[in-house]
Structure formats: C-alpha cells, structure tokens
View 1 (cartoon, rainbow, N blue to C red):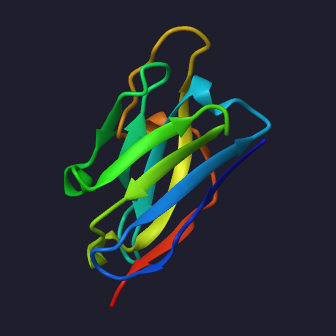
View 2 (cartoon, rainbow, N blue to C red; view 1 turned 180 degrees about the vertical axis):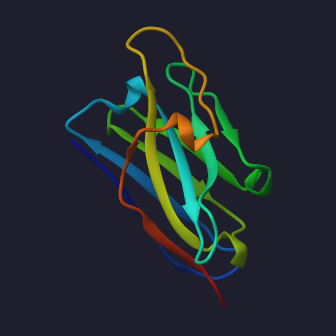
Length: 128
C-alpha cells in the first residue's frame, strides 16, 4: 500500500507544473484526497481536496483560480494542476487520503485532521 506524490521541480514565476498522487495497493477513487504543502519554517497547510464520487473540489483562498485538482480513476491517480505559480507557492507538496466510501458521496475537508494516510512529498520551487 503506497501513496506517492511526484511532478515537482524548479519553475519560474508565472510557470506551471502538474503534480501527481499515485496510489498502489488500494483504490484511490473511494477516498477523499487532499493536497497539502509545507514551506521551510512554516506549518503545513491544506491546498485542495476532492470529494468521493462527486469529484467536487475545495481550494485554499491563496490558490483559487490558479490550481485545479482532478481524478483519473483509470490511472488510480489524483492530479494538481498548478498555473501562474508564485514564489510563495514553493514548498514540499504531499497528498493524503481521508474518508472512505464505496457507494455514497463524501464531501472532502481542508482540515488535515480528516486525513490519515500520507504519502511522501515532492518539492516545488518557484524562482527566477
């Protein structure tokens, strides 16, 4: 059972990156999933999350309109498309799974208390 974030790197301000959160050993579509980030010297903060079934999403105010979270159930992967990147977006980005449901929809939460299984992160650096 593994959850692995990838796709980070160095990008100039205004650039774009797409992060992937791939699951192995379990089916990601039955879980709420959150993306979180932690910059050096700062606390971890929620970036976005996606519901089970409805694929509705939530975003922290600082990334709304710039970041988009999606699911690809065939790939057992969740993505975070990041556009118009700013230096303050630099951080280690991690994904985590929250609540499980086989049939009913579950609304996701931006509270990290709702997430119990965390994958390793990927570093995003926005700099000229």
